[in-house]
Image (cartoon, rainbow, N blue to C red; front, side, top):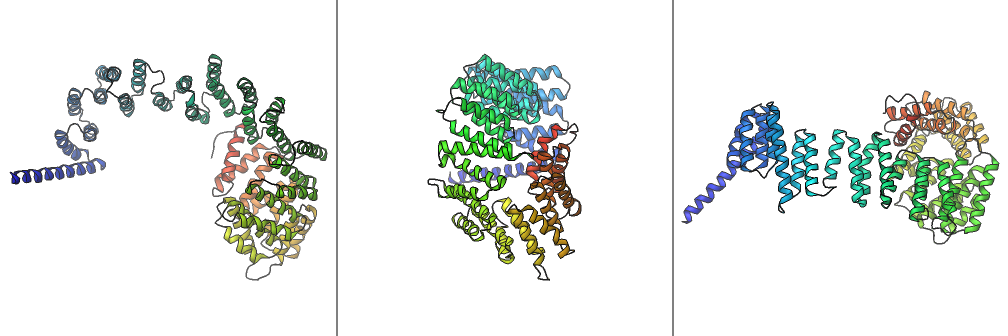
Length: 614
């Protein structure tokens, strides 16, 4: 008896190994598209195991690839009889009839498959709903989109759950480009499940990105909002639609109505204001903040709105090319009044920093700005990083005053405190730049080389550029006189001594003819003229960098600066688009590519010619 069982065991193992070898060989033939050889093996395997979906599918595919429709029909028809609880077999048989031109038989088996599956799921507690999804997937596999939808919709109706298979249907509508049905399905889902708002936004962003049926989406969202006023989710969706379309005035009306209805004290308005700010729609942002202020000083967002309004006004003034001193002094008075009313504390720290910027960079009263920054640095209960950022700003201000030791001390403190953080790396870079300004090139280059692998790409890029500048101009002749003169001119620019900086740059070509600093001189002159609001001269010098030094390291910097100049100061959208396009196409490894692409896409619709998008 033992010998019998041992023999039986060995035989079973042997047969198992043989079948496994056949499966591997069949799969290899199948992958190599040798369907005739694969068919022989799969036919053999299928006779032994007709329940294996994997073997069945590959065997059927071999027959179809060889156009052996009669054998395929016989094989699948048997499966339909044996396993009537597997509706995917009905789909395969209908597909074969379609290939044979038997449209009536095809439709019959498709409908029968849908009915079998729907009845089973509806009438049997043991049949999982996933069977309907499998059936729909089988139709999709055969590109039978009408039946893929029909199987889901009929089962939904029969089971009585109005949002059943919603995501499956949405995915199908994307493929079939039935965008109105997609929108309807999303709105239906929200009607019964408000918590699905994020998922539905993810589905609808497909519509937004492609700019398809946006009017329909807006109209239907408004209809649902009016029809179901108790469901605030439709108000939220309509606000989202307005924002996606950049219809910020409509969004403002919607956000105002939502905040009044929900008594949320301006939550929607404060969020919308931030979005408007990021899109540089400062006028609508101001309206948002003013609306929140009108709710009263006891409101939760009142102080935030007051500070936001000031920041928006600050950007409106400082980003204009034609701001005047009266606008700046009016702004400083508003800041001073607000800080006086709410005090100098953690909540108003950002506004105090903005006021210091106005004094330092626009009114050019650096000492007043320094006094405010010194108060910020000593302010209790500030977060460590926030204090570190204010220290860097104070270091810059000290450098502008010529207080080199104080500047390097402040940079060093931040470097030491945040050594493993991007803030510490920024402090190290500023200290290295200070040494460069001061003519200590060897020490500066050592620090810059450390920063080449900084976690911040901006810091890394700046470190690489400055390190290369030092390396290229402290070469074999060991003379650093020209670079010292140039770095001194750059320090004067940093200190806002524009005329002195320009004079020093003009002397350089005469004192050091044919030196390799020409592109840096052009670029620095462009920056000076831009600060002096002589935008025509700035444009000329940036263009010289691109024209004569297109292969050098500053070319993409100059192009991006040109784009910003055309966009913000010269109001030349066409030339701005051309500058950003050149970065995208010709300097695709530039640090500015991502920002250039965003600006390009935002400005492109403003032009008549929108043929291509890089």
